[in-house]
Amino acid sequence: MTTTSLRLRAGLVSIVLLAAFLGIWHLATRSTASVATMSPEYAKLMGLTATQGKSAMPGPLDVGAKLWEHLKRPFYDNGPNDKGLGIQLAYSIARVGTGYLLAVLVAIPLGFLIGMSPLLSKALDPFIQVLKPISPLAWMPLALYTIKDSSISAIFVIFICSIWPMLLNTVFGVASVRKEWINVARTLEVGTVRRAFTVILPAAAPTILTGMRISIGIAWLVIVAAEMLVGGTGIGYFVWNEWNNLSITNVIIAILLIGIVGMLLDQILARFTRMVTFPE
Amino acid sequence: MSDKFISIEGIAKRYLGAGGATTTVFENLWLSMARGEFACVIGHSGCGKTTVLNILAGLDAPNEGAVIVDGQAISGTSLDRAVIFQSHALLPWRTVLGNVAYAVSSKWRSWDRAKVKAHAQKFIELVGLAGSEHKRPSELSGGMKQRVGIARALSITPKMMLMDEPFSALDALTRGTLQDEVRRICLETGQTAFMITHDVDEAIYLADKIFLMTNGPGAVLAEVVENPLPRDRGRTDLHRHPLYYALRNHIIDFLVTRSKTFAAETPDHDPRNVPVVRIGKPGLSIAASGEEQRQTWTPGTNPGLTA
Image (tube, rainbow over all chains, first blue to last red; front, side):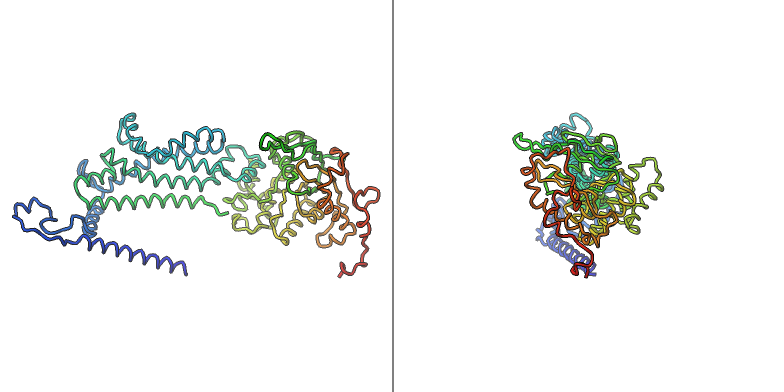
């Protein structure tokens, strides 16, 4: 009862805040600037800002109308510089998905090995400590030079940025499985492989999933920047291309969509995390 | 002592301390148990009781000496020796049935799902948890969790059960009930059991033999006290037995004073032939002197106890 009313009230406050934000935005971008008198020929050369006093910044209504246009035709393809937003997002998600899955395939088994072996853990620690803080984009030139393919380079950058949180969390999760659970498996003469899958994996799963959730967030942050650099396709390229077209409306729409997709990716991982979390 | 089902032969455990100095928890420790016997170890914290139990379980290895169970020296853990952990150590992502079934399927790898489930179910019922099979450990009370721990240990039909203060985290009422259960199950199945406890009454109620350990480091097994109470003793009238207070006082005297001074007072203590104390049997009793002798109890003479 109280929780529903709290959620209701919180939702109301959210809606009020959104309305206030949109209202201020609308008022701030109203056409208020004075219009200079000019000859019709000159006026043709000038934009709407000069001739009609329209704000250079698009208002919420402009953005809404443009967004509706995009939503009606998300998958059109009019050549390399004019593709639907759906196609651009699909490219970005595909790159993030590929790089991220490759990172999962490497980080989790490797993290398991490192977590179970104190020797490997100590031996690999300096490498991980040095590689972890490197900005993923710093790898880009090296990737472009060695891989010689801009699209695969972007995937590599995603791979390299999402591997560290997963690896470190897997190592930590595996290394800190409660001794007593390990002892239960030992007294039951459970073999190493079965122990890894029936005791260590379920015990470490919440920590591993938390690392995976951090990774997907970072991967989605990095893909926009990476696509701005490599160009061609993707939502990051779309943002940069629309900036070059001076279409601030499209830039704002892209920003909004990047946020929504990022949130969805995070929510999916959050759901998986809840599935493997056990109450104690 | 003719049938040595379990024989601990001269084990030692040492830890490397800071600066290369070694700390000897205990050394040259000898101890034996017969089949079907229930033994309790009593001693202060730090005397190495848990280490002895871990060595028996195979979770820890001694620096010297050997442990022989059923004629064979042990190396590592075994499904023959089940452990009931102090902290119950249930796998929280498995249900009650899942936890017991995990042990069952570990022992009988070839069994199919239905057979494992039926076997696990039997032991869940034995500890009185029927109806809670599909609950997770987080939904259970402390006593119920420990029941699952007991069911898990029993389900693999071990040759012996090792218990490390299994009831110390429970409230007094639950502890009493579980002591009854453990005693009943051990008597019914003829289980050999080795239990660590801090509770003198628990030891008197459950044990056939009570091992008294002195304070560590350098702890020794000082005495083996044989429990003079009848095998069919009940928890409620335990304290009315004529030898109950003699036994209890003997153990408490040991814990309060002799556990500290034993090494100094008994320089000729032979760890291979630890004295066996039989309370109340004249000639064999070494500690039941003076005060305890006077506590001879006859039915009906003490209104305070019979009321």
